[in-house]
Amino acid sequence: MSISLSIAFQIISLLTSFVLFYKKRNKLILIFIPFLFLTVSVELTGNWYFSKGIKNYQIYNIFTTIEFVFYSSLFYFHLKKPFFRNAVALFVPFFLLCFIINVLFIQGFNKTFNTYTFLLGSFFLVIFCCCFFYESVLPDRIDLQLAKQPFFWVCTGLLIFYLGSVIINALFEYLRSNDLQEQGKKIYQLINRTLNVILYSSFCIAFFLCRDNRKISS
Image 1 (cartoon, rainbow, N blue to C red):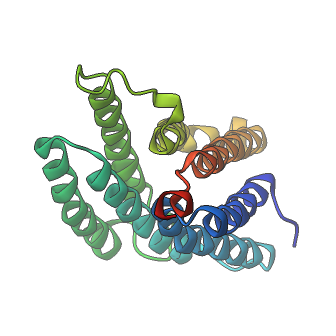
Image 2: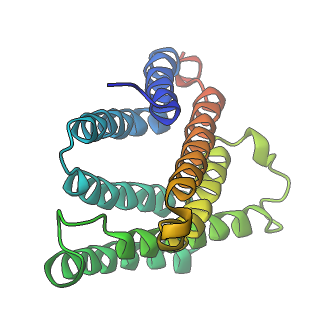
């Protein structure tokens, strides 16, 4: 079983979170550690299933649901305006309801990847990213240097990843057409791996920029 470039960057991001949490004891890094560990575990398991010719849809259908809830929770705690925070709070149960309906009545649980709920979650995460950037340019926060804020890099990575994912998944059926079957798979894999590299690289940058709480406490 070979490890793809995207999985390699996920492992790098996980190891970076371990090392930098030991050095900084930052809460944001701590929150990411179990999530990144789950991410790497799911990717390695899914990759092994695929190499054995076993369907892995159910693994990714569960994981992407957890993923959207996790990222939404981050936005809930980092957004300042009550309207935006309430929108995030309402999105989570709405998304979970859509996931259940999709699994029970539309796409199923292990027959195919739940593209409908993935596109729905991706769309809302892009909206939440835009809300964060909107708040970042308001007069009372305009003096803050965005590039030095850890969550700016998390948000930037999420925006690029999910905006790209919306586009590539919307075109997925077209890329799988008879005329583009082989080339379409290569294009999809290339874009998906590139998006993963960008996402997990942005996480690493965010971890490096996190405040060193050991110095503050001392």
